[in-house]
Image 1: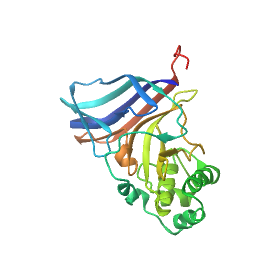
Image 2: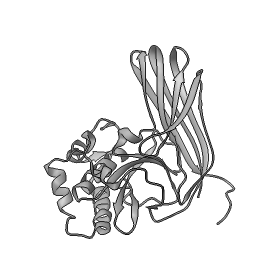
Image 3: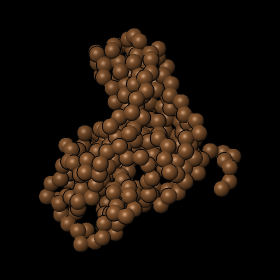
Image 4: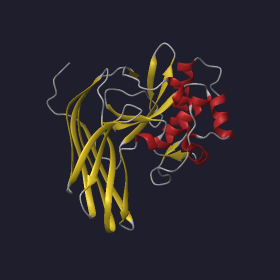
Length: 268
């Protein structure tokens, strides 16, 4: 599928902020099944951009605002071709698998998550991961506004609801308890209308297959409608935008994501 993306993030500050720096993980890497045709990042305030790559292999764009900022919009536009690989990822891996068994504050298990993982302990790894993905889709409610980016997996699972990042954190935590390396993925999912956030799912390292994607918020493995952007141990490593500033007072955030099938794409 050829995917066209328009991703806009607007920050507003009660008073002008200075020293504004934004770390943007919004540019996807190419890998087997994913080819970037065009990509552009813009800001509506004066400043400079600097490109780098982080330890996970994500492309990172640093934006440094030149002066005081009361409001700023970061715009990301691009086109990518994505093929359906049954969720299997073929990409260069800069870190060993063992890194993705590490626990983070957002993926620290409690007794309930240990019990969740134990339900699938007797299955082959791939079967266990698919069963876990389906179970979370069936047993957790997708509800917006009841969790945030600081909500750990244990709290979301105990509450029985969350958004895609919570589903991903719970999946990752349980997979690691099963001894399977697992990681968080931020990206985009083609939808019929614009959304107020990017999408998130998980990947797990399956013997003899490699890294395989699982989207427990939808109960499936990623298809050609998924544009993979950044990965990490949890949300904090792969967040589309994180930043620092001096002053500014209260902050408000508005996000609009339009990921759609590009019109007039070439037929396979």
